[in-house]
Amino acid sequence: MLLAILLSKWHPNLPFLEVKSLESLGYLVEEKHDELTLIKPKKEKETKNIKKTLSLRLSLSHEISENAMVFQQKDFFSEFSGVKQKLIPFISKKTICVRVKKMQAYSKAQKDDADKKTVPELERQIGGLLSEKTDLKNPDVTVRFYLCKDKIIVGLNPVEVDKTFLKKHKPTKRAFFHPATLEPKLARTLVNLTGLVPRQTLLDPFCGAGGILLEAGCMGLNVVGIEKDENVFEGCKKNLDFYEIKNQQVFLQDATQALPKKAMVVDAVATDAPFGKSTLLFGEKQIELYKKTLLNLKKICNGSIVFSTNIDITELSESLGFKTQFVEKVYVHKSLTRRIHVLKPVSGKTISS
Ligand SMILES: C[S@@+](CC[C@H](N)C(=O)[O-])C[C@H]1O[C@@H](n2cnc3c(N)ncnc32)[C@H](O)[C@@H]1O
Image (cartoon, rainbow, N blue to C red; front, side, top):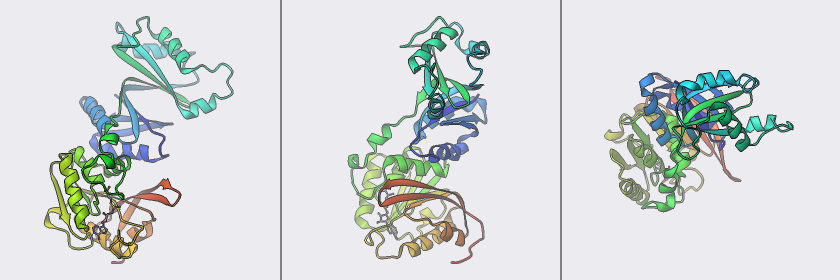
């Protein structure tokens, strides 16, 4: 069975990359049509679990439907009996509610079509063609139609991705506030780009007030943080305790120094590295700080290193023996664009150290 995930349009690539990075949960990305990604669980019986887990974990998606089916857009209405035939096993003797979502590319392509129908008109038309038993308030089955540029994707029983973390984890709601902390949406995205699954260990070597650790901890990952500023270090511990994060270790330490025993082996790293004011960098040159830290991380991490900062570190990281999986830019404001690098260590390769 395929699951259909409706991606957000917040960024052109990161929503898809977030879903792709989480294939470690036990599925494969099969197809992408406009803002819709179809995934196939490796084990059919895991489908419900994967739908639930993703709905609680994704940061940059809106909803997930099951039993997804793909139809050609051009003959969708002319050959509707074929569509109905495929849906019968799921809707016969049941009350249904039809919900339609037009993708941006579909609407653009329809711009000059004089016969174009509104969403409520389409919902009524399709509902009438499918069944006489409609219940808009409490249906047995919700049938979701995603109108893409060339295809129409049908999915059943969509669930909304849980976005309550955006409010609950807002920096101003935490026990300790720090102005340089990451917003929960991006913090959660960085964690998901590591592809870690519960009980694996994530390290943030510049953990600050703990924005990344908090998201990772809520997903059931073990978290390790390193922070050099004593006040911020205390604040980070307060924040993790405030949200009752279990399996956490935070060290007052310099990320360029030999790392503590507990952080000796980690499964992945996600970090928003310091930049800008020299106080945040403790007077260290930015590139020097990153170089020493990356060399340190290479000793303890075989998995992904998700490294966010304001500059492109591709050349530096590749000279230190890392392979770049991708770099994505995230515009923050006029004078700040973050670069999200996903790196993998290449074993035994360190050209300059
Ligand atoms: C951009 S902030 C991290 C924000 C954090 N991700 C959050 O969401 O709260 C960078 C942090 O790195 C810390 N830092 C700077 N140099 C460091 C070093 N050499 N070792 C460890 N931490 C350092 C700073 O004190 C600062 O708290």
